[in-house]
Length: 272
DNA sequence: AGGCAGGTTCTTA
DNA sequence: TAAGAACCTGCC
Image (cartoon, rainbow, N blue to C red; front, side, top):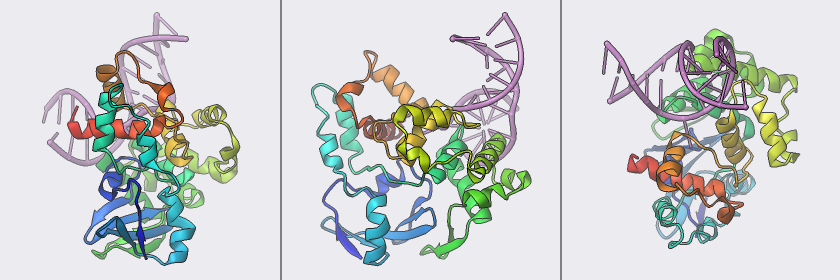
């Protein structure tokens, strides 16, 4: 179905923003996989986009997934060019990025895998994991199969040999344990939605293989709490070099996570 | 060939 | 409590 989107919306930038790992350019548009769903999105002219699904599915799932109820343009307006020129430049450069509303389990596993890996390596691992334990849900325009993200049960059923075959390295035991804990009910990601930020962080940090950085990614991308501010090597370099006096967290609350995305995207492209 | 990649855990003092 | 080492794997 075709829909007009007047707010910030740039598929290429979202695909490259590092928040999602199954969002890829392919012939004729962008292949977007989320949980057990898949859609092909094409950019048309005049702010119009063609989503390869019917209206019911768009309204029921993709509108929410792309967070179309939030104005990222308004969020960008919080940035004062004179007061914070670097962030202003970063936001102009990253204009079009949105924070997707992704599944907490998929994000948790994805960011556990992400540690000490570059983005292509993360994607490769996740793709192998989906092919191994997910179900085929679609084909992209090049005829390549798209698989759902594995359920906790399917992941927990994998042997360690199968897991390490997905190039997880030492993270294989983290993924295994997380899946087991979810299946056993000791970890209830749904129930954690009702926790406040601090309590949620505390629970996440109890997970094997989850430290502060991965927990913040989960809070921002898995729970869509837009104030979470993950600090990775790129962001730390930016904070050190560009904000020796400190970043203006108070100014940007409760949207620091959105600002983090602009900084991350900008710094990575600038090759800082 | 050795170092490093969107960190975290384990060990040691 | 806080540094420092170790950790899988792939890629430059």
